[in-house]
Image (tube, rainbow, N blue to C red; front, side, top):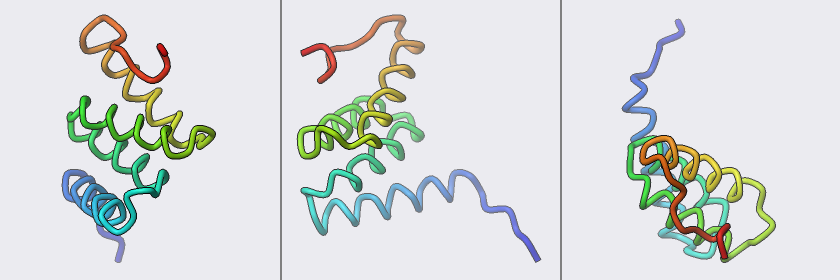
Length: 90
């Protein structure tokens, strides 16, 4: 039978998996992008932005990293009413 997972539990599991992937290979831009999304979902917007920017520093053409940074910046803009400094403003 199909069971619904608790969204908080699912997010926690996603963040844990992303952290393990980053711990195994800190140069894995995709893992850092996934960690950025997980951190953003948890409300750690500064941590999410930092991870997305690290992913872009590793792999500047990675679409997932650009997407993660875009989501983080959009959330920050809505939350604070301003865009914060990021890799995009350089």
